[in-house]
Amino acid sequence: MDNCLFCKIAAGQIPSNKVYEDDQVLAFHDIDPQAPVHFLVIPKKHIDAPAALTGEDAPLVGHIFAVIAKIAADLGLENGYRVVTNSGEDGGQTVHHLHFHVLAQRKLAWPPG
Ligand code: AMP
Ligand code: ZN
Image (cartoon, rainbow, N blue to C red; front, top):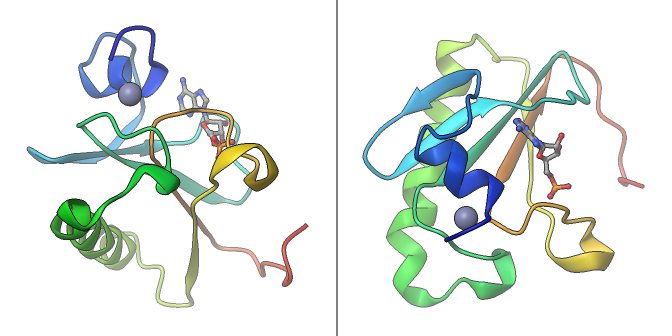
């Protein structure tokens, strides 16, 4: 999609600090990390937000969580991690291309702010 930051990152038009890539997804370090480990996992296909997901996206979302588990194992995050997906204004979404934050290596508070 034109003028979408994460579509441009997925296409390699804007550089990122890549963690993992396959034909469906890209993972890269967040530019403004909120934990010692903070990376994002995005589908290469443009989807606006979690609110735009449909049943047809179920395999893709399942794949994303399997990728997160693989990266977490590769990075040695055996103490745990948090996956966060913000949707819409009240959810705190600022980039309108579906993405999953993965945060780790500090004790994360609950409930979130
Ligand atoms: P959200 O606020 O949930 O939409 O998350 C967007 C995230 O994208 C924020 O954590 C930003 O720090 C991150 N971000 C924005 N631009 C970039 C970029 N060029 N490379 C990596 N992360 C980015
Ligand atoms: Zn996009």
